Length: 439
Image 1 (cartoon, rainbow, N blue to C red):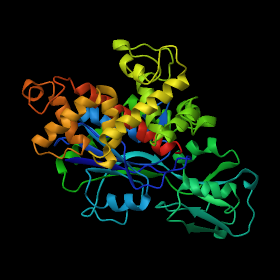
Image 2: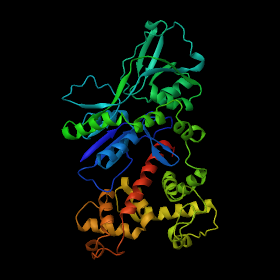
Image 3: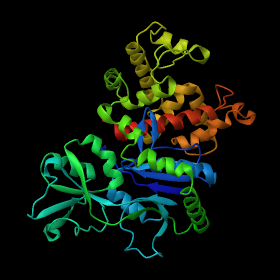
Image 4: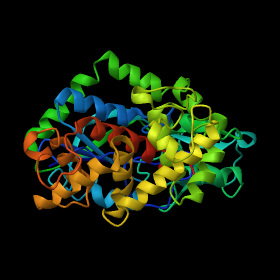
């Protein structure tokens, strides 16, 4: 199995206290799958108008397209865990910024650079003119770049304080609170964070350009050659230049529009989404992700088969929950939340807890009967029926006669590929919300 682990940290929104959270799960763990772990990092990954995008995220999607390898993405929010993972050879690609110069080539394999950046000083605006007193510059977890203060006034008065347990956002919060006076940050990350910290400013650069690189699995020589060749060629394309302008520019329209005042919201209906989800004991960000997939919050949308409203539930389901096409958006959301809770109840004791929302999302799209059929097929063929990656394979196979006519199947034929793709898209969005929007 191919694997990629990409570190992403540095977003201004608070990150949940988690280690490894699933971002995407493909329908099967095929031998040609690239499994990606994305570290929570400003500009590399965020949610924009309901869609997951970002510099490295988009690069990996382009890699998937060009190399014809499916990509399976996981996200890591803990720098220390990611650092250990980066050295483990567990993944085919690890995208994590740390000082790789101390590791011999036999121990880790480093890719061609994906981009270049440089360290800059971050300070409060009113303190932009520093004096000759000793200055302490704080660095965040795993910040590795060698700093050079020679261009600053009284360079010998500058010292470095490493903070291995803090992210750059933590340091910026401390700057605002006046707990510290200076921090250092990569320029590309700094420009994405400045819209959130109007009291702060980017100061002078304090080091040379350095490359951002991926770590490649030592055992995948042929694959590594392909990845490096792709990187060299892709960086010469207009597509790559567009990505740099889109995500790494101080004038990025995506960053300025996607965050701003609504940085912690998904829609105008977050209040009712949170209340309804809390009432029925599931994560409000799941129902928001489903609504984005179903209707993009368009209240009067009518879909195939008579589904309607923001939840796009079928008429028979709407009738069960007392909803009509004249019901308010708020009532539709409450009904949808109740239905999602019903689906959670069906699968909660049958599947892996980490995969519950995958099963629920699949059942929301296809109806629970087809998902239960796929579980029974999975059992019959002695695969782990608690994992969505296995069950989704049999959901797809339900379009073949030998499977939908199997005695364990109760609901007959079903073209499951659409539902598997639906689950992938919803759960990609949900996991994006889970990392960027507060619970």
